[in-house]
Length: 196
Figure (spheres, rainbow, N blue to C red):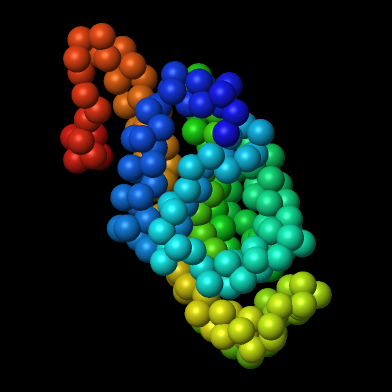
């Protein structure tokens, strides 16, 4: 993370607070979330690999796969202004959703969550996901096993998780601004239940 990015984030929201919110969201929902800066680079994410989709870990284990994932996220970060939350399919066909952190209508970052499917995978859907990444030359049996473990998140839960992330993003920005104003007076960050 560049020092400019960190300075911008510190002006808007305390980085440790953002990490705490991401961790809390992930623990509560079982879904991994990552914050990207205005240059579409990841800046915060949940480090506990128990929450990383096994399929995505496998795809990201090779440079070409990691590049495709970055491109999917970059396109989402660039498209966020069209509709929010922005629900999209990554290069492999998994569902993700993105929304922006805004201050005075200016976006300073994007949060992306997902790595899921919204319906049970039948043989045809599993084969389609497999075919999307088959050219990465990953071990076929390991890849098939990872595809069977992709998290199923029904459409309603995707929508509700996106709405929750949006509320957290709005409130995190507001709390960060309140905190920076009260810092001189010995203020502390509000507890989650104080502002939900």
